[in-house]
Length: 369
Image (cartoon, rainbow, N blue to C red; front, top):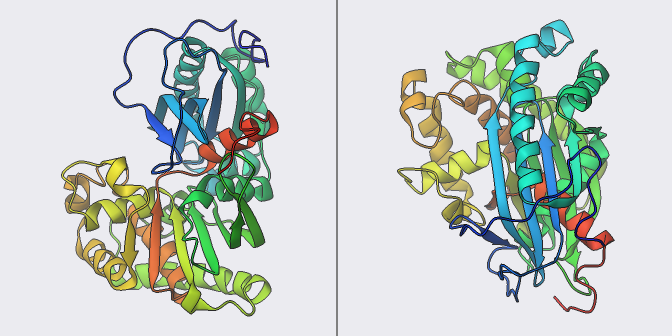
């Protein structure tokens, strides 16, 4: 691929600046890597943008060894789906927040010379009556061509992004991604080693629940959440999870299965479990929690009032009214799949998009994993 080829919707690529990147990271974490760190590296930069119901996230990376090296990143809570459940439309204020965040992402992609990109929008744009109007406005005002993906694609990309964190000794994994407007659940079998690059997920079944932290919190309330309200949220979600289990989890041996969670909910729970004074991805991504440890943090969160959640360094004001809705979704999954262990992933759709693009381009051809 031509390193200087422009990405549709982006200005011609500029050179990567010479500044050091102290926050740069390689992926998959804890895997052997070769090369990729030289400033003279001419391999192309790839960009993956995930515009969700609650967040706008971007990763820009270059191939490195059996994975990739992140050279730039962006994440902002924009609540694109705010009020969507009641009105059926994306609101003007939410659109303005999204346009601002997407403009920053565009500038970062240009600055890093991203010559290959995938820019996806998920549940909010799928569900909104004005989703296509919003997409057209983004194209005209920001110069980015968003792809509104279906739920199956969203589940597949999350599986690709999280597969390196599967315990290789496990017979199966229940992967879940708790989003703002929807939540994906995937049953995975043992991953397949690839001839270079990260392992390939083996999807045995998947479902997308039209329930996320934003939609659930807007219906039940997120500021004042007592035990009765929390229990009602858990019960509603559990009904949907049991349908998935009845269809896709027959014969699953829970003794040889673990949960694998990716979302702000599970990373928040891990941060609280680790007693972090400020969130640290390096400690959270890949950490293991026993079921009793998860329960302990959930009990702690349910006992907090809104002000205490705001004051928590792993929650803050932007998530304080959403975190208990996420906990309810996690609790429902744990009821249906009472596994002894949960592994926490601070990775997902963006990493899945990057791997998917790089694998299509054969960047790891000839390598062994």
